[in-house]
Length: 420
Image 1 (cartoon, helix red, strand yellow):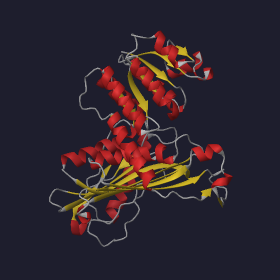
Image 2 (cartoon, one colour):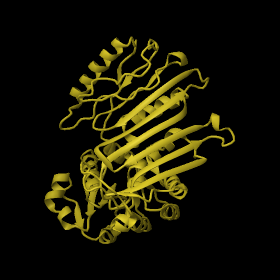
Image 3 (cartoon, rainbow, N blue to C red):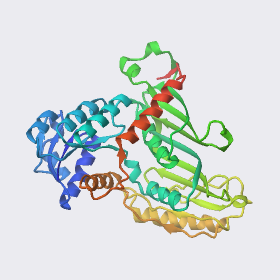
Image 4 (cartoon, rainbow, N blue to C red):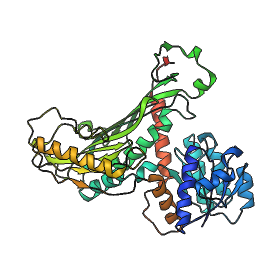
């Protein structure tokens, strides 16, 4: 299968490297790349990425033209504003597409791409790569195998990014909204949003409130630095029986983080299960379950690297003897080798379990943390029709996220004050 990559920026370079891995495994052939900046597609960079024989183009349209009939699929990792036009051209050339999230700038563009893909009998998927993180995979497994009902989800994503083409509501919130849609498995009947405009010069510098009149054109076109969503699920006539999800995202964070906290019950509403998923440099999921009268209020976090402890819940008199504890090993990185993080985590949680009398089964869930590699591997398998139950995000999934974002923007009263 011949593939190409269009856009060799930060994400595009990662996709290219992962496709090179799949090429070495004999699963795909990376034949061409394109980027408007010729400095990003030099022979040295292509060799560093593992695809020295790939042909390079400054104009993606030349790539599509030169490989017409010989290209099976392309990854599109350009700025979001260019996604629609490039994906449309690729689909019209009978080429399958994997497009970085959020897919397009608007719902209308996503709907149009879906129509083109259906008419051309081609596939288009959207790169929501957090779906492939082991904590998410394992959480889905627990929910499905144990028939758990999700009552609430609280999510939070943040990083320091004072300039963005899409704003925090589309860049960060889209990840969280996609995962909430997976776990809730239904469309919310109520969507509320709150957004604030700000672009601080530096996270550590003091900021003052100001009016819109002092904003630059860029800041006016890309307004949202924070975003908060409140989603309600179920029957609007029975609000006390319904589920709720809240999600906040911010570009004003001194560190990059992402987390989801799920509260669930079994089918008989007897046992409560709490799941904590963290997407920071060390990843883990923390399900804890037990009888209703023995359930801790909140398990707030596992922290690795100096994080060898579990933050103590407020009700220390609760009996933890029936608790269940499941851990993930740390994600491998230069400063955080997975074996070291895993050992620290197990030691720390063992001590906490002993301290609070938790007779828990500490189980390590192994798995690849290379979510973009796993995403590309699943993409290739799906195109080869070897996987009919792929976790890849479809264009319909992206449209649902766009619907929520649009409804949030419409419902909201975004702040007229601006932090600069």
